[in-house]
Image 1 (spheres, helix red, strand yellow):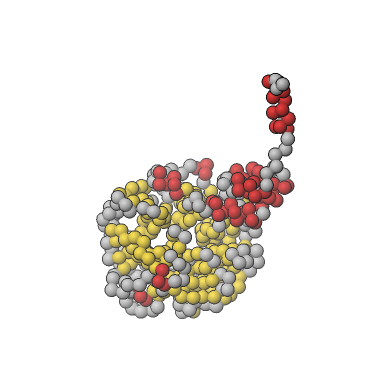
Image 2 (cartoon, one colour):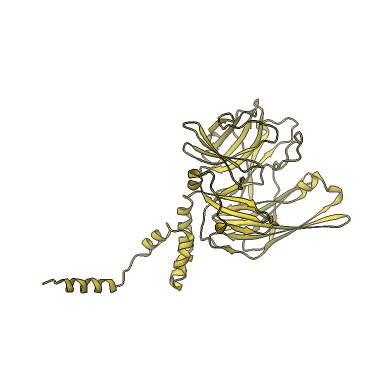
Length: 403
């Protein structure tokens, strides 16, 4: 006969038994957790550490984490330090005026710049400059950083650059190396690409994480467009230093012609695996339309091309199948009037940060403004905080190693 005492005894014996779960199920459960929580399990034992450090699990967790979109926001504090804050997009949509908790910030040094983010790793660029009577000595180096695990690599990728004083001025901008950060999946290698244009000659170098050395590779078939014609009241304007997408780095380039039309533009793509180039055409059909500020960005898991048309509307194109010209599709065209933006002038620049369904997030350069626009009902939410959203980039927290 089962008495209450006997039942309690059986339950007690059952609780003392070891529960075994298959590794596949454990991996599935852990892959849904944040990195902060996973690191707690990593400290339990050597076997847990080995299990969580396995590249297969790291990749599995990254795939899940990538589904939770983040924007990495950057801003400088009153001590001129660079502050980094990954912000979940769903929280930003819920409250565009989101405040930044000082406890959640990652503070970097004042002479640090962010090159890019890839698979949860952020490439940090440090630099120094020494001037002599005849030349300027520029020195750059990198550290690779995982904000989620709070681990940074050792200093690597030292690169020296000498600029004679007779090239100081507008040529200084061209002579300085620009950098882009990406990942090559075949060899599972993170790479930094450096390029510059000097005296009408291009120079391209590649640095691989782990090798700690730079290699020269073939220069561009068409130089990336890193200068626009001088505008009224403005100096040179940098479009971008390259966009990483599925193992390629993509730059906007333009054939040298005196009048700017979209048909002069080309997208130069560097395959990080073969380190060879190919050229892609931007969206067709704009040869007679005045436009400004063409920008490349990765949105909706595809390469996107945006521009400002006639200073009245923002146009965004999406390449559904990478490398296929016919797959360009106009994703949206939004009037600045609908965004409640006025006083459009030559200094105005807008960038699209996020698109999903009927929701689009925009940011304005040189301001702390952010715009959340609903394509369906054409409503807009505007917010101002101390974050420079214009320079934000996609981010997904991960367990990726920095070495």
